[in-house]
Image (cartoon, rainbow, N blue to C red; front, side, top):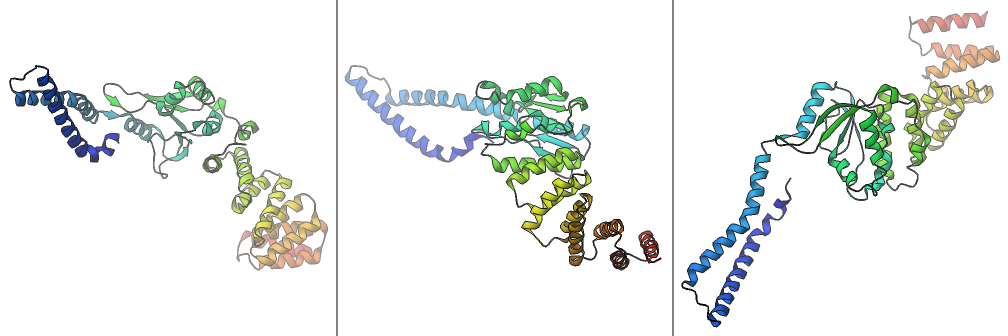
Amino acid sequence: MRAERYILPIFPVLILIGAIGLSYCWDAAVIYLTKHGVHFFDVTLNKVIFASALTVLILVQPTISSIKYLSSLGLKDTRTLTKQWINEHIQQGSVIASGPYGVDFPPEQYAMLHIPFLAFESERVAPFYDPRWYENVDLLITSDYDYGRYASELERYKEFLPFYDTIRTRWKLLFEVKPDADKTGPAFWLYSCPDSLRHPAFVSSMFERFGANPESARISNFLKELNNILMKKKEGQKSMQIMEEILKVEVGNVSLRNRLSEMLISEGRYDDALKHLQYSIQFNPNQPKVFAMAGRCLLRLNKLLEAEATLVKALNSDKYLVDAYDDLIELFTITKQNEKLKVALNNYLGIVPKNSSKRVEIEQKLKEVTL
């Protein structure tokens, strides 16, 4: 988009004002020179010659600029070339991290992680310029669109430059395109992170840089995007770190807290999971599945009385919670409460489909208890 189009509407008025002004200036100059003994052989002819010469001088620069601009329209754009290379070489469904460079793709084609950028007060987004955030993406797009800006003021943007230094010296360059006589647009460099540089978890100092940053909305959106990508990549430890960071701000985000609890349970971190489940129940007590998960945590922590009460509460609210039945049966077996075990097994039979292997297992267990 060219900035000139914004001032086009005022051109006619400016031309009119300029013409009137030039006419007055010419007349004043003729009168002044005539008084001082300078006579024109043909005032009208000289006026035409002067106006023509001035018009040519005024039109030279914009004419040259317009010719250059129109010529550039026929050149290949580096953005188009970059997108073309990605479409040809990067598998669909891959994860791409990029700044606001105009190289975007539909979500069904590639998962995008957007690197935050601010034209003003750029220092606010410095914490996002850390290569470790992007170790698990399949492709990182960098450009002189932002690098050129940061490199031009080394002292002001000193927090950004190590990001580019690390990428250029340690990551693998896959593709490069720069503007020249045949191409227009910004320069692009596309990288992938070597496996040897990938870490299983984030360093706590990376999150600490967000501490006093006023860009809380950007931080939250970035972390959510990153979390979705980490879950897609099955990076459980990093994903849990991200979720815990988000929950420091979005305390009442029940769905995220429950998802984190499930992951913590799968990792055997029952104490941590239980704390999050208790928070979740405080915000929304009508969650039978959350009670069932809390019951499992209590069972694994050997808090049997609390586990029993919690699992029973879950099943009273939703009798189809299979996991809650499994845990309750395990609990009654451990504590040798046979009567309660019979009731639980019979209730379980009531929701299990006929001819299923699970039903055979429950019936066998019920026979053993009855004998």
